[in-house]
Image (cartoon, rainbow over all chains, first blue to last red; front, side, top):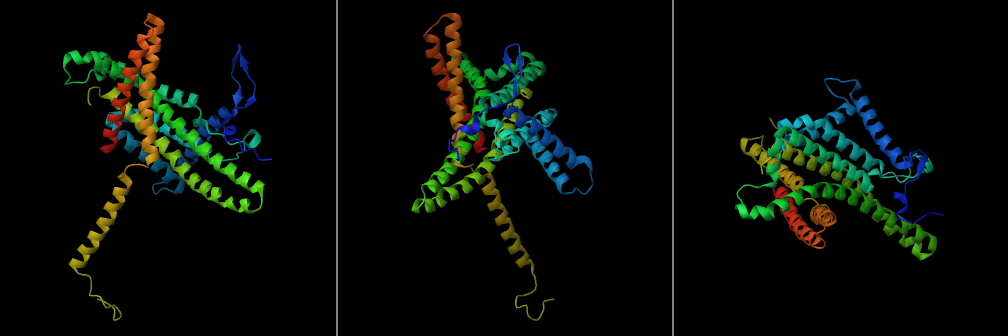
Amino acid sequence: MADTNPIKQFEIHPIADLSVGGLNLSFTNSSYFMVLAVGLTVGLLAVATSRAALVPGRAQSVAELLYEFIADMVRSSAGNDGLKFFPLVFTLFAFILMANMLGMFPYFPAPEFHGFTVTSHLIITVALAMLVMVIVMGYGLFKNGLKFFSIFFPSGVPVPLYLIVTPIEIISFLSRPISLSIRLFANMLAGHILLKVFAGFIVMLGATGGALAAVGILPLLMVIALTALEFLVAFLQAYVFAVLTCIYLNDALHPGAH
Amino acid sequence: MSSPSDHTRPPEPDDFEHRLAEKLKARQARQAKENAAPSGWATGMRYGSEFFGGVIAGTVIGLLADHFFGWSPFGLLAGVMLGFAAGALNIVRAVRSMQN
């Protein structure tokens, strides 16, 4: 009856098949959750700010809290001129947070009632990280011209050492989108597998019956604790992604400042 | 003005300072907790992905150099070494940013 395969939750099922020129562009459950994450974020924020009052109500104060939180983060890690990237950082944070939180539903009003975590797929996190890096490089080159490349030539290094230091710096720069995307992906993947593994233990122990069924209370307690931890991770990873975006934007805005 | 049942003396400046010190201590403790290093899992994940990213980027660049310039296998060898160094550099930077 119950499927205890912990990997099954990551399967992608097409909802509406669509093929353009041999490319499979089906609308999948992943797309569904992404659309939902965007829709819910926009909808909730629109509702929260629709009746703006001087003394904010509950929803409005949450929205303001979110705004202040991100604005402070951008200001403290990318400076005041980093605030022009506030929409980008806020969008990334809100999307990742909402996608992570939607992933916390084991069952969800989606086709087949499967919950799904968008950010547990590497391709999504890589796309987000590449977006950030393209913007950082594009804006850095646009604003600073060739001076942008000074981040590859740290000051105070003897000239012959640039032969080694510069390739290392370049690789270090190129590794940023990789570590940025892998961190988010691995955290969500590992957390959700762990949850399902322990949840599977409950079912298996319960199915054996007898005294072992009573032992099933232990994995149940574990799942409760892990769920709390996962909520923390869901928020923390969205935050980390946004903070690192700000730090990388700082490199584009002020090259050679570190 | 203390009520008859109140055995303590009325509030005095000393008392206020005492309470203030207590509040400050509680607040500092809270701030220390907020600023404390994140959980081991998060820290490990951070360093792990930083290092992993460096090595992967170096390896990919080495393989690309092999592929396009025909340097095989030296592109990969150099790429992995440089990637290792870049990963170590990433970790050093991550640690420094977390300590500040």
